[in-house]
Length: 110
Length: 113
Image 1 (spheres, each protein chain N blue to C red):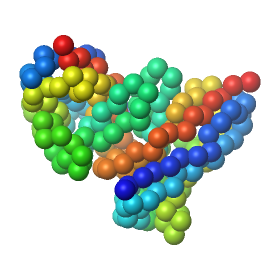
Image 2 (image 1 turned 180 degrees about the horizontal axis):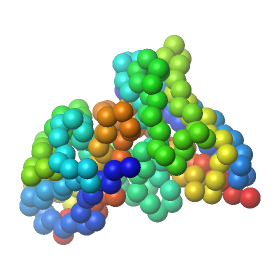
Image 3 (image 1 turned 180 degrees about the vertical axis):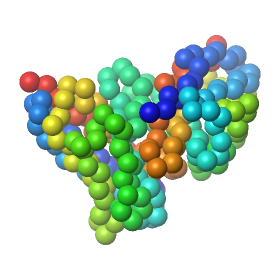
């Protein structure tokens, strides 16, 4: 089964910009992996931020965006707020096999 | 308002069975792939299984193949996960989601003697 890799932790300053990435052990991540990004805060269920690489859920703040960058899926946060401190997970789809989550990135806003 | 509500979790002995349910409202359930995701205590998210909108095709993570069955009833806007031969490692919060717009609040499954 494929392994999906994320940065274990990242720190961003309030108002700053940070990019989280999501790689695949099988090679370059493409739109065919239908990358999803989810945010989870302690004690809460996850919520969807980005699906199908770059599409935003209706309630996703404009400061979040999704893309493909250097063979990986990427989630960029521009203008970080203290409330963005959370765990972020990516999910990749492998055709005919199933899906795999990355290990998550703990984002600190400090 | 889009909503998913899971039920059916609880305490079960190793080797036992449990059936989880997830009821949808506020969106066109029959148009979406549906997915079960679990999270063991203090751990990350793990994809468990998904099912096509028409219910004809399912996929599973290797660790649950042959033990878990995902199904759906579009007439009842409901998703199910039948779990059998449960192991300690299956202890987790189980979430249902359509991945694009909505997640349930989760239901806790504890496998312990």
